[in-house]
Amino acid sequence: MNERPGDRGRGAFALDGASQRAKAAVKAAWWTAAGGVTRALAQPTRGDAKVKFEPQGPPVSAARLRKAYLSAFDKDAADVAAGLYPPVEDGPRNPAAAFRQALDVIADARAVDQRRRRGDGVEVRDEPESQGYPNYYRQNFHYQSGGWFTDASARRYEAQVEALFSGAAGAMRRRALSLLARHWRGKDQRGLKLVDLACGSGSFLRDLDGAFPRAAIAGLDLSRAYLAAARSRSRRGGVQANAETLPFADASLDGVTCVYLFHELPPGVRPAVAAEIARVLKPGGVLAFADSVQPVDEPDLSRLLEAFPAYFHEPYYSTYAQTDLPALFGAAGLRVAGQDQAFLTKALLLEKVG
Ligand SMILES: C[S@@+](CC[C@H](N)C(=O)[O-])C[C@H]1O[C@@H](n2cnc3c(N)ncnc32)[C@H](O)[C@@H]1O
Image (cartoon, rainbow, N blue to C red):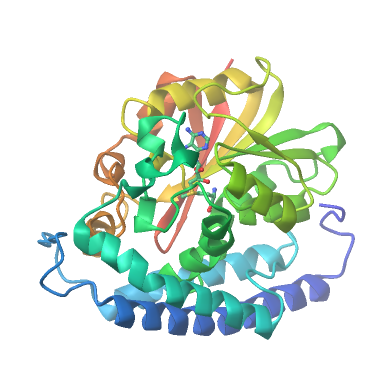
């Protein structure tokens, strides 16, 4: 951050927090409405779908769901008010762009639903663009059109995620930013090197850029199309590479961030990526990790978590849900130094020991 706590009066941070909350409320209402329309169009519970969902967990109480949902916005606004990071405007900056994006998501909802009905999460394997990538990657995650391979998919992704999480995605991701900003508070950023692993279309990269403007930050992703979108969303560059073999020297980075990657990796690949992260971090360097909450974190919401892989083609989610994350990262030499949680996302701060 340019400013350190104490540079500005308390009132300025409080105003920032209030403005963050107000903007979030407008965005939340917008994406809740857009998400509602896509769900109404897709009608995911119609009986002819191949996807069958037999819930095991108890019904989710509306009050519990609302409390968890609002916690993402409350924590985000509190962190802005505390001066941990500047106010962030998630999503499109003007109503015309917001309208276009919502229409695009709604227009694509039928294609997504047809894929869901066919139970076809590997349609992209027929596309020439997907040749040469690992098989686990050549899938239509979320049943999305184009998988990770097309510009249209990259353009649409953020709006799809916001519609899915009713506008809370940005605030949830920033639980990882919060942990990192606390850890680095007061530190001179100028020498810091940070990589956002699996940066996707760059929303979190943009947040990192706002929080640490003087640090050297780059995104990394396996998708050429998503990297191009990330470049246009944040002012930071991107590297196309596989997280299993990172193109960085041993002990060369102060920080790695990684948001919503691990639930999309097969169980056999997760330890390899954890080991790569540990290899490229300096001793004392940190991984700020965020991904889905697991049933053990949120037993009251377990029914929602069960439904997610059924409706959104997440072939590795069920093994992720049972993974002992501290043990996974511990085996790579990363120990838990902090944790946080909001709505459907958990964040961990992991420090390289030794
Ligand atoms: C669910 S998206 C998350 C994107 C972003 N971090 C976010 O917060 O929205 C998963 C991302 O991981 C990338 N990815 C998946 N497997 C990868 C791998 N082995 N190496 C690098 N990137 C990978 C995909 O291309 C995609 O952009």
